Amino acid sequence: MNVSQIKFKELRLQAGLTQAELATRLGVRTQFISNIERDIASIPIKLINRCAKILKRDPEIFIQWNLERHEMLVRKKLNKKNG
Image (cartoon, rainbow, N blue to C red):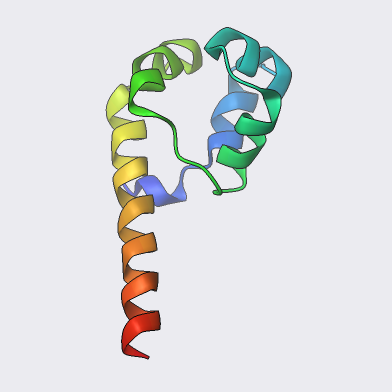
């Protein structure tokens, strides 16, 4: 599965939830959900299982998504240093 193709917003919408509703269920601010959807923030490890349950997805999707996001950020930093 190419997790980078999966958009968090699409998963939320498929679950029929607004940003505010998901934020309330996860115990975070709506702005944090927006940041995840805009790829500014990652899903904290402590929220992965709860998020997966709410969105009715395998937690592995969110784990893999975080790993891919972090790898991308590291590569960007390395390219800046070497470029």
